[in-house]
Length: 151
Image (cartoon, rainbow, N blue to C red):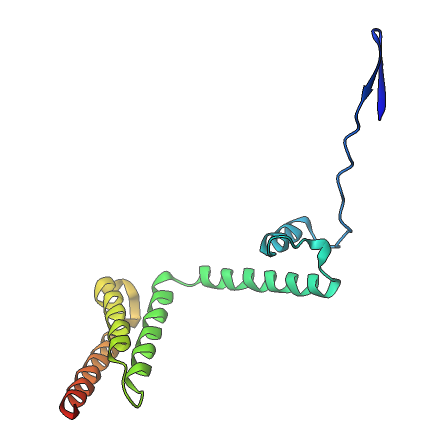
């Protein structure tokens, strides 16, 4: 405990504990903040080994690069890519030994919502997406009729 002298006498002044300073990581403060924000509760930068810090730094840098790539692509292209993913999902469910019509139907409906709902806003991919959607719908109907006939 410290004291402070005043004309009215000496007064005891409690000291604040010194804030704990972690070991230097060698990282830029922004990178330290980004890594710290990604850690689970109860884990601090001090808990990580130098190798783990290096891995975390690399992961943060890779995520930033991917984010920049996504932001540099037109939104229509990204959405068209997702629509193709829905096409693939629907086709996979239809190509099973026993087609899963409920899951395929959901993927087809989701693709249709994008393709029909956004139309020309999807750019050059629209004709390809429309053709793929038409083929997927036709395959669904044919396989469903075949399954109903066999049942």
